[in-house]
Image 1 (cartoon, rainbow, N blue to C red):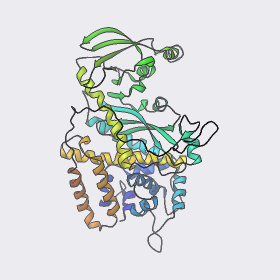
Image 2 (cartoon, one colour):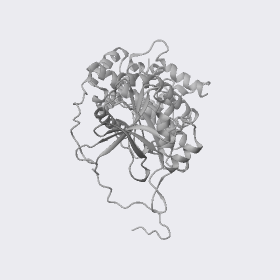
Image 3 (cartoon, rainbow, N blue to C red):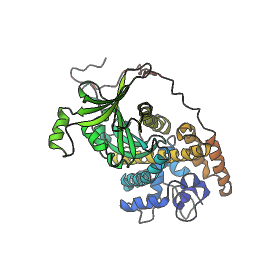
Image 4 (cartoon, rainbow, N blue to C red):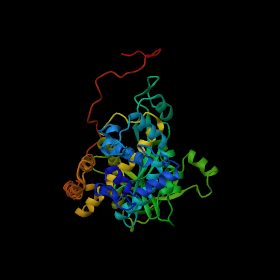
Amino acid sequence: MELGEAILGVGAGDRAASFELFAETLDAEWIAQALQATGTATIRRRKLPAEYVVWLVIGMALLRDRSIREVVRHLDLVLPTRRGRGTVSGAAIAQARERLGPAPLAALFAQTAAVWGPAAAAAERWRGLTVYGVDGTTLRAPDTAENEAAFGRVPTRWESTGGYPVLRLVALMVLRQHVLTGLALGAYRDSELGLAAALWPQLPDASLVILDREFAAYALFHQLGDATRQRHWLTRARTGPLALRRRVVQRLGPGDELVELTPSLEARRLVRHGPRDLTPTLRVRAIRYRRRGFRPQTLLTSLLDPVAYPAAELVALYHERWELELGFDEVKTHTLERTEALRSKTPARVTQEVWGLALGYNLVRLAMARVAAGAGVAPTRVSYRHALQFIRLFWLTAWTTSPGMLPRRLDALHDELALLILPARRPERRYARAVKRPLSRYRRNRPRSRGNRVK
């Protein structure tokens, strides 16, 4: 059985050993359900059916160094003809992706995340709570008029906009396993706080979400904190004019206090015109701390019990928020190979590509989690870069290997992944933020305009 057929055979009877790497994780029945739910299932016989195009988009993410036509060939995603192995043109691939659209990939991501996310979070709890993180980032899209109209560009002071069209996204991640469970996409002009509104309902009961301080908003604290459902939040307090005013109610220990937050003028307007349960004050816990070489900081949290949730552990836990930043690095630096922009030249295909990228990232991460479980270490101790390279090599060569040798190659792959265990992290290492690579010494390509001379 060819690899493309093996992909589609997953979860539907016999399946070839060539795809056991992901067969345990991604059920082909889920793909069929996503296509049916979005009305994009293939009815007439085509060289590239919709099910194959779903895997093409995922393959585009994992095989970033290969052209799209090479991805089709390596994964054997073209139905054979009477004359033998089928071929497909680049235009036909683009048309197949247009017919599919982004909705099936988004539905498939939501369906898989609903299964993978809770299981991954439950495997690494902190004091009975699953640990999530929310943060935003951007991705560059190819420089086309359609992408610019849909996503916009980064404003500059040169009476123009610079670089490429930019897509903004906000991610919800299981921090201790690096599994994406939610994704909100928008244009560059959209705010992270606004995009994240679609992610908050996905937080389960008995969970803690760690937020960047840009999400420190009075109304959001009310929305996320729910003691009856054990839904909690942890963030760093803002400073400056956007800081929420605090009044100490009770001292719990050194640098540990119960405080009442008073909303800003904008938040007060929401109190008057918003939901009735948005009270004029909010009781939270404030923890002051200082790390060597850094300024003093204050954490705010809805975890009010100092015995059940010690302050020192909360300080250490907050810095796990950087696992989400490391996840963004794994996507941009390693999966996308630091490319200037995504591949797709239309907004629908750009969005489709991002959903495929998220699915591919999760597939790699779940394969790494199985290896980590076998080695008895945390999933973050497995090298993402080398695991991705091994999986790419397996995908690129599986279709050239005889079926009888594939089980042995798969076992060898898992053995090789087990060798990629990283040394334990050294939390005592501290480095201030600094630019490691200077900007280009070449001139920026800025448009000439009245009062704006290029020097």
